[in-house]
Amino acid sequence: MNDDDKSPEERIQELLRKLLSGDASALADLQGIPGIDPAQLAKLSGMNIDPAMLGELMQQMQRAFTSSGEGFSWELTKTQALRIASAGGLSVSDGQRAELDAALNVAALWLSEATTISELATEPTAISRADWVEATLPVWAEVAEPVATSIADALTASLQEQLPEQMRDMAQDAGRMMRGLGGSLFATQLGYVVGQLSLEVVSGGDVGIPLMPTGTAAVLPQNLADFGAGLEIPVDQIALFIAARELAHARLFRHAKWLRLHVISSITEFARGIQIDTDALEDLASRFDPSQPEELRAALESGALLPSRTQAQEATLARLENMLATIEGWVDVVTADATARLPKSDAIAEVVRRRRAAGGPAEQAFSSLVGLQLRPRRLREAAAMWRAITDAVGIEVRDTLWDYPDLMPTSDDIDDPGRIIESLQARVRGDAPVADEIDDAIARLLAGEDERPRESDGGIEEPGAGAGGADAGGDTNGEADGDAGAGGPDGPHPEPTV
Image 1 (cartoon, one colour):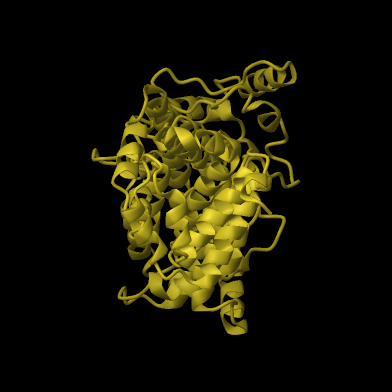
Image 2 (cartoon, one colour):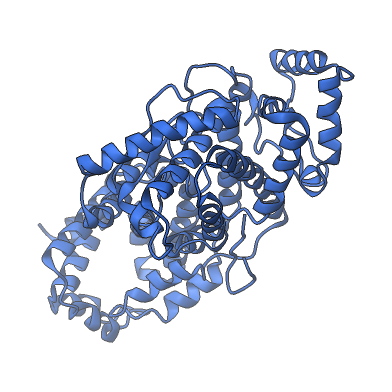
């Protein structure tokens, strides 16, 4: 076939194939084109690319050509994450599963004494790291897709501006390919982060956000040993504590079905507000050395391409911070009460709190990639609030606060729980019209009115138009499982801490 008869996509594929395979004729094809440095391309052509890597690159390009340009395929994320997760073993041994099943059964009995929120409809289970990747990947993809879109779009625009005039038409025709390759680069990096997280987490709710399907509780016995390394605490006590904490987390999200949508929507709302720093991207492109491609990966890892936060993002983060702190504070108090029989429960609880406050290496990598740290900075204050509420009115009245979003504690309540305690005590005495308040909330839902929690100081508020509608209007206390959702410090890039 004559070169003139080839499509722009075929010409780009052939050019890259020549460059990556070391074919010097590719350099001759580019001689005399302004803006193209043959010396730099010569470095690329001598990179000794592995044939399998070249084949995978060509497959990615083909997928990019044939894609609609909308959304991304997360198969690369899954492949990369599973490769890392499977390095330490593909499955849970029968012995590990039996020990953990026993711990989960005991923890479920203890937990029923510490909360009135009902047990799960499905049995909790022991899962492998690879199982955790498979189960949580849909949520990671939903959270990360807005950032991947921003990076891919910015990369496409930057490359089109950098190319010489003679190649503009061809670049425009191959825009879908460039966008797809940008998404593939991000997807691969996300896969690395999720894979590393699978080596660190000890349960489905360990990261703090609802990653597992609603009503599902799971513990990773492969990581329990690493969690207890150097603590001088019997592993059976650690297993019981982690099992109780995981069950508390899973029960809460199954009971308050609107809560999952609150959390996921807040995170994706924040991510949609990210616009890539095009100046930083163009600066990177201007000095990019093809023989050292790790520079681009380092830029993604460090978050150097993410700009400062907007006011809207700051407001979203304030809501998310209060929300996660309120959730984990309740989980902390319920877990502490349920595991009071364990001699080392206080020591294990402190390890969990410090671990959540510091975050592991993979969690830090995620914060750089997406610009969001999932750390509840107000966890201790929120736990103190729930402890005060429990001591004042008991577990049954306390747990009714999760029945409807309107009843949720606000950030003011975390600072000073006196108001909400007084209100709950009035209900216990019969001085407050509890039925009327709940009936009014139900009437508003049935009428289709806005039932979002209101908080003037940036507390919990349903993010996005209609986000709390159908889901919040469902049976928050029913037995049927529902799965709504899932589809830092100042520095050179944002690392907001939640």
